[in-house]
Image (cartoon, rainbow, N blue to C red; front, side, top):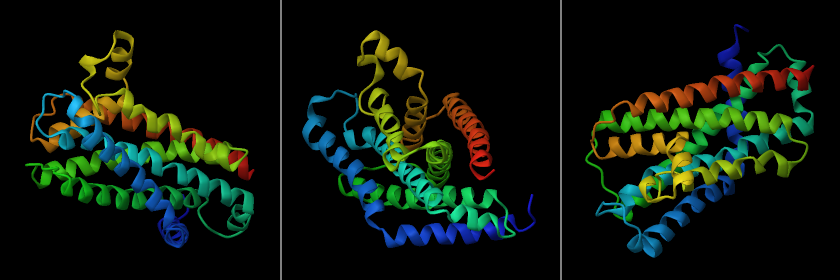
Length: 253
């Protein structure tokens, strides 16, 4: 590994973050969509949805956070694709820098920009009546899960950005990811779903993540579900990272 990996990554992070701050509409777009979904479900559909809880905002909150992250990572693929098309990668590789720092700059930018979106959504949810008795450790655990989830999806986004042949192709992969929370326990209990849909919902990663975050917010025991969450996130990160690096080497070869 290049001995200047961390300093190189910091420079790449700064460069990528400047692009984000010059285009604040990307963060606004990513934030507004989940907020609109939250408003719709709470104030329009909430009264007709039976979840067994008195506060539907509390029930909905984990899924909304995951939707925000799934929406936000599409911009990582978009920015990466634009860098490839502009030829800036070739310029970077002519310099004595760690090659992987270019990708890590985009990945860390995704973490920062998605964290901003999540904070804004939490503030709006508080205004809508979201309340949690969770302590500091529980909130830190939620933050840790969201970071792992963001990392997992961001490395998938890196693959899409490297493999895409058009701008639309680079960002379109995120649509199925945004849809996943709708077929999970994020909006309604899985017990209310038809058999095949229920089987899928109960065995996909979003349901485990939603249930774990919801339990942490409510100060309930998470049980073995936390290990399922960690296994899903770690597995996706490792596999996506390996494929991303292979695709990256092929692009710059």
